[in-house]
Amino acid sequence: MSEKAKNEVSEKLMVSADAQPAASERIPIIARPFVSDRAKKTLDIVEKFVEEECIPADPIYVQQIGEGIANRFSSHPPVIEHLKSRARELGLWNMFLPKNHFKEGAGFSNLEYGLMAESLGKSRVASEATNCAAPDTGNMEVLAKYGTEAQKKEWLNPLLEGKIRSAFLMTEPQVASSDATNIELQMRQEGNEWVLNGQKWWSSGSGDPRCQIYIVMGKSDPSNPLPYAQQSVILVPASTPGITIHRMLSVFGYDDAPHGHGHISFHNVRVPASNMVLGPGRGFEIIQGRLGPGRIHHAMRCIGSAEKALEWMLARINDPAKKPFGTNLSEHGVMLERVARSRIEIDAARLVVLNAAIKIDSKDAKAALKEIAESKVFVPKVMLDVIDRAIQAFGGAGVSQETPLANMYAQGRTMRIVDGPDEVHLLQMGRNENKRGKALREKIEAQKRRTEEVARRFGVQRRDPLQLDRVSGGKARL
Image (tube, rainbow, N blue to C red; front, side, top):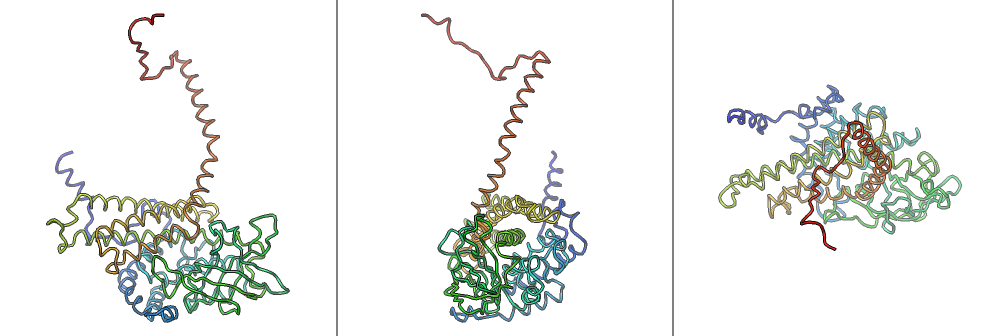
């Protein structure tokens, strides 16, 4: 290749910051046929809203939370309501409910929302500002898909309006909750009520004073011979007598106020039988329907977090005021290699998630279990690797409050645990993949036999291409 040709290729590969194309123009080409013009326009609005309004508001939100445990978990930063109003003005509201399954959403597909969620993942407040924040998104999907008309009217509608918030209570401290059949919270029916006794933790969202409804999974039929028919899901108003929020759990020292992750106990908590979702014994069916799309939402937000980390890394290694050994970090080969690896990994992770979203849109979450699991395992690992490289570029500043990277890493690390730890997904994927083993062995053996048939047909004596048959010395002496 001539020097001129090399320069032309280099110029095509290089994209200056000033020439950064809009989000709609950066949609991977394999996904573009599945994205509507309306979604492309909305995607650009989301990106502009996040970059110009939400990210600058992140530090203000943190400051408005205040100090002291009691204050932090009773606060509601005014900036979030301002951003919610702005989001509604821009038409950025409830984008997460897929159009092919729900009538209550904004009319986008899982793929289209996935692209938008990437931008939302770059800001602490953006998801809540657009009413697309976990765990409300998954809880709204449960109510929209499985709830009765009365349940929808009482809880779904105010959630869709962003007037209240919710929590999903599944994990328990005394058992290995990664195996949900271990869940012990007792649900006992007495007349037209269910009585709940037990405890939950990592009840995300329960610290927020606006959290008014818990979606609780418990054991309603422990003697049922079918282990996946023993559990039920029920709606519990947060103000019900007998509920105690004992404490909030920290994430690498961060309290995540006012959202929080509560440790909650239930003592003879009485709930109307009409609050049962779908019916007794249907708990596993409900949580599987809830967690599938939620894993995609998490994964796309992780892509946004990784992109943000890479942006901070690029800014740091090109900072003219910070020149170790007399040169910018960008002139050190190891840093450029880290940048390149980050770009490759982020782009690959994005394709994994979009593939899963397309599969869900074409059928449903159950049909895309493998693709969802691939996203759940692969994407958070990529995000953490990219954030770690950015932290390393900043040195001491990277692990401090000086940059958002330390907090991003802490939040990102939980993604390898929530909605099922990596090990559970890997085990199931491994088992499913291994089911092909017998058939593949038979296929390979059949191919070998076919090779022998072809050899005989053409009169070829089969032998190893590196066979020497070299014998040293003469004949062996007896």
